[in-house]
Image 1: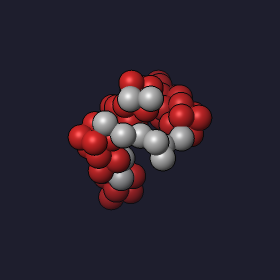
Image 2: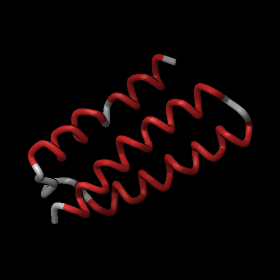
Image 3: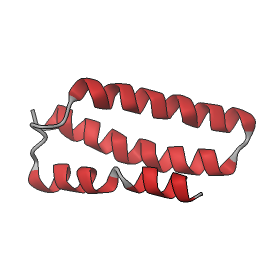
Image 4: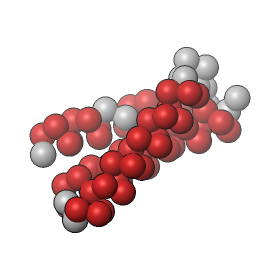
Amino acid sequence: MAAAVLTTAAFAPQAFKAWRSRSTGDVSLAMFTMMVIGIALWLTYGILIDDIPLILANAVTLILAGAILAAKIRFR
């Protein structure tokens, strides 16, 4: 659970900064695209095996990483 909390929370500062500053110049579009796809796959896996911690951690992470990806695309 500690690992899930830390790896999920790690995306929060970047997501808040990107939306607050409207700047994503140093954020890699390719990296966040791959990251969002990977997180979505982990979430799918968690759903398939009915693992609540895996589902919760990846759902929140997907929201945060998705927000960063959306900011990158929106604020080009």
